[in-house]
Length: 211
Image (tube, helix red, strand yellow):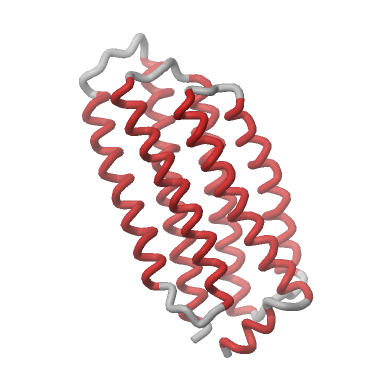
């Protein structure tokens, strides 16, 4: 079964879908990298590049879904590939949401911003690990250790998020809407890791189903 699936990676619509999913994850990695660098430099101009990447990601998702509906892959595999494409799309949407909030909020205090940068850097590492995990589907590697690494990084983000909210509770904001914008920025920034973990779990399910 695994050998037959591996051969699918190498021809026709199946290969096209695999290439598109790889492109989709690469876009996520690129968006995470741009966003992380912009946070470090407090650059609210270049961060708009993330929105452009999200538009490209929408096109990639549509192509994946179309080819799946055209009959690529066996039905049992097709459903999980569709879920993976939708989850990857959610990751890019969430990075874009964080970007929009970042452009709106005032400059954060250094102690809070440093924690946000840490999260952005972890999101980038998770995206890189996710890409390697997907590439490993071509091999007979057990992906359990890779998905565990993704899960550990997600738990680290959760811990940092709690610390951020503790710090924010002690700070003053000028009005309700400023506080809401800061909250939404943190929420979207941290949700990226949750969704990357979900994508990793789907890849692991694909891997187990092919054994």
